[in-house]
Image (cartoon, rainbow, N blue to C red; front, top):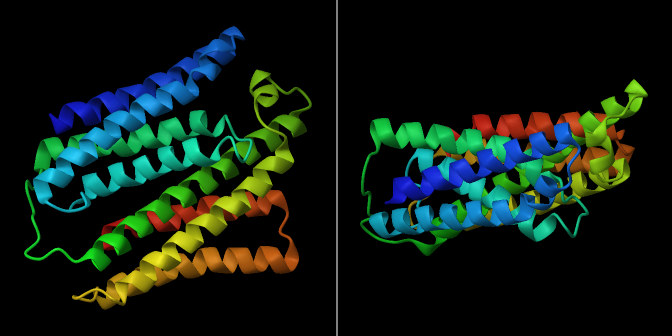
Length: 256
């Protein structure tokens, strides 16, 4: 049943993105208004999948690469629903759907080919659960920051073309994107800090490689915030940095 919930969640996000594209081509507002209900539906199916996998393992369901990708996708969606309206980024959900779809499509294939099955722990360490959950929630915030960066670049290109399309008029003011991007990076860095601190209290400490990888991701985002606070990076460079930093974070997922 868990695989069915994952498939339904993946189809929901694919459908939401397709509806948005069709709405822009037909100059219709309706699919854009459906982005939040579709995101909520996808989140429900994601949560059901993670709940069943959690029951299977008797712990937080992040025991293999597929579950990690779904957890990061879940983090992206839930943070969008919590922060999107507050940051005036209602369209962020539409831009998030393709990456969530791709993450979950990979997870579906992974579980279909090589599902390792139940992996219950000999002993449940709450600090380990906190470390893992906070770290992956941080990756969700970093993912949204990267997506906000993509939105900025798209809007910047539309402005410079002198022929902005319908997408341009659907997006938030360009200055909101830069502000929201920084806030998302701050949120992600705080969450990752909590996750790293929790690792020091774990009964079985992570490997040196794990600490190095987590520290490298934390340092990359902390450095980005420090440089931006010091030099006020131009929004375009800030956006490219957020996208690059998230690419780095994704490349390290297998080591977490």
